[in-house]
Amino acid sequence: QVQVVESGGGSVQPGGSLRLSCTASGRIFSTDVMGWYRQAPGKQRNLVALLFPGGGTNYTDSVKGRFTISRGTAKNTIYLQMNSLKPEDTAVYYCNARALRATGGWSDYWGQGTQVTVSS
Image (cartoon, rainbow, N blue to C red; front, side, top):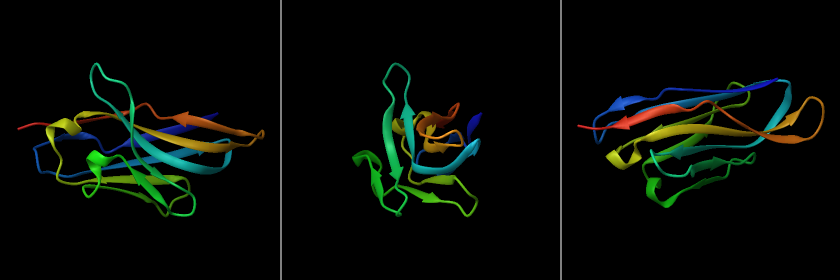
């Protein structure tokens, strides 16, 4: 059993900040790429940011300069620091982890999502 748990969502005014956390745990040895995706109502789920094992990152253009993805000190934990939030950032944010299963092989796992609402 593998769990991916997100936290840190909420409501904020435009220009505000939030920090999302994500931890993958369970029957896994390690994680590879971890990332954040978001899905607004009536739209498809899209990539927000990726964090590679070597520390490299990738961001969608609309969040560059405002969002920062980073690795936590706890194993298999990442964060998404979101600054200068805009109403168009409103969405459910999902964490994804590519993990090496204890039984062998790699799989992608998703969290349950955390709501971020940006509104005045």
